[in-house]
Image 1: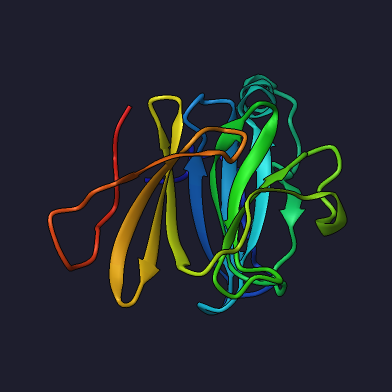
Image 2: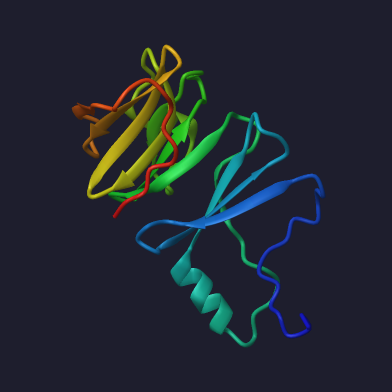
Length: 173
């Protein structure tokens, strides 16, 4: 029975829109990806603190309002995490091989994005974050390469892999 459930979000304005909800590693931000296909997606954010206050408010009206960070239609994006008061985000916006940018939630325009790891020769497939470091998976000559970076974008080293092939998702703390 869902009669007591609280509606926190809906996008009834477009039934073809797909959504995915996540949370940053520090538990401070909800991340909402939305898109109609696989070529582009938007990214919206909402502070968990705001969400808790809204849920505790007995007189609340409406639904939660996520703040747009990246509008749909620009390119593909994937938030890596919230680091140093910025959303570290993989994107292929104006970089077909991908790059990692830092987006200030107070000034999210594309002109204000700061490149952390710029587009290079290889295709950046995935960026993971754990142990206080960034791990960047690139595809070069149809083979995965793995590099370790600090938060400022300086490459620390290349991690040798056992042979030809492709990596899966990296996980860690």
